[in-house]
Image (cartoon, rainbow, N blue to C red; front, side, top):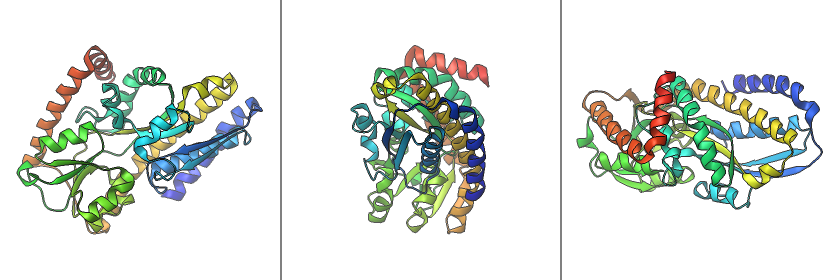
Length: 330
């Protein structure tokens, strides 16, 4: 499956580059691009694809080196590093910055957009506001790719929130911390690169994520159950220092925009393609994979309504506008 995807993106890269190669400028740039997730994660692979495609499209004039797994800069520090110019391009999960503005948590409101189709419609509704917010923060949005639908990982069978009381739950943003609290669990902030160690040492006993994280981190070594909830599809986003962006000429900006658009489409297609495969891999490695149902699902949907109400209140008129536009597109 990985080979087929690589052939797919190589094919479209060649086609795309044939259209834009004549617009190459002569200003050489070498850029480090820190990413929070493992090199084997499809987001990191897509980052490498973006870098390779941009290098090809510019004849090597823009040369990006990808640093996955928090190896150059830890995930929680990537955004600040790009804002201050320590590095010029980086990637982060969007909802990690929800404490800065509700706009960053739009993609993680439970049960609003539960499919790839609806996720793209929701992103189309809030992308303009996201871009404006990032510009004010000194950043330029390049592209964004969704994760597969989210589910819950546990080390035991769970039939309702009565079974989750006191469980140490790995959180990575305010939304996941809220889920933990509403389910009676204890939220523990853990970065993706530190998840395996947290599970091995008992710092965390449960978490919410997609099959991608479970596969990358081999969580079957510590956990036993995965419940498919499909509550939301969080997004990662790649951004650039705005001052550095503004210094680029229009030709280079257009090349980057074009390659970024290609990376967004390729990454999204890859995410959807891998969704079922990840579930198969979790099962093959001994985990019990099943849909959340019965009382557990009812309680999760009730929690989702509470979180959606809270988000709408915090997002105010902007949030209402986004949801109205999104609902019209469905």
